[in-house]
Image (cartoon, rainbow, N blue to C red; front, side):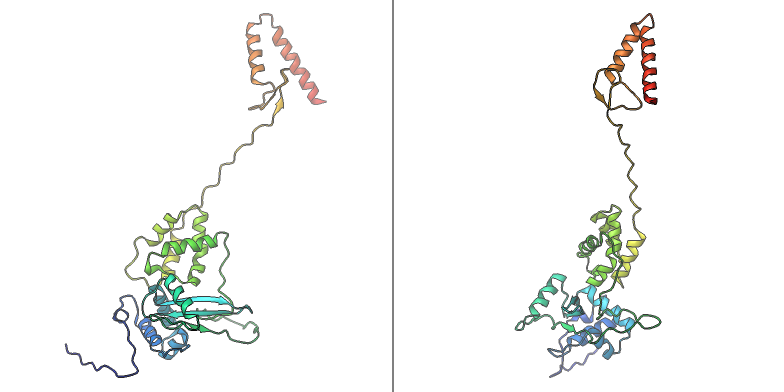
Length: 303
């Protein structure tokens, strides 16, 4: 095998070999990243514009973008301006960055005199100007993920915020499962449903990260599938607790208040004394007296 290489004298870009030989990046992802890194300093070109110029189709672009985000070469943030318009800020790096490292580079690059040696300047997309247009008839255009006047809408859930935090904590340690903020918001209601059904963070981590395939084409798709397929059964309804009987005055004449267990009218001590007296009564007078008292109480209850 012979190789003949002439080093260019100008108009060249130094690209790390790990990008060219990356085992998990498709050819579209490598081309998109190399094109972005080759842009001159200060160039404000979005990823979607680069994909158009590079001849990458929409489906290939979305897949390539997801791969670059999962590997840490692309980071994206959405911001809402004072007039309610949403913009997207993108950071392209020639080396993988964690979310914390990307935030530090973004904040540094946002300063007028700052520069970052390991990453190109973030490209901020301005929203399209103009008033709102009436809704077109027919099928809505597909979400491009680049810049939209409103953030994507996802069903609300009472534990959606906790679900998003749990997802972020679970996937932080697995580079292949890294999600951007939009994907976290999309999956948060499903993770929240796990929490609502009594699952712990350990349960969620075990279900989402165990037995991962060697190649993951879409982290969001894999996580959605596992969140739906392994969703635990709803927690059983709590057994209703019977309300205790209300307090009532003892009918045996002691004047104390007691709480009957069933339909007793006398307290425990009066019932015990009555039973002892009945056991020693040979004339039946006590039994007759008790029957008389019961008849009187029944008559009074009908008044």
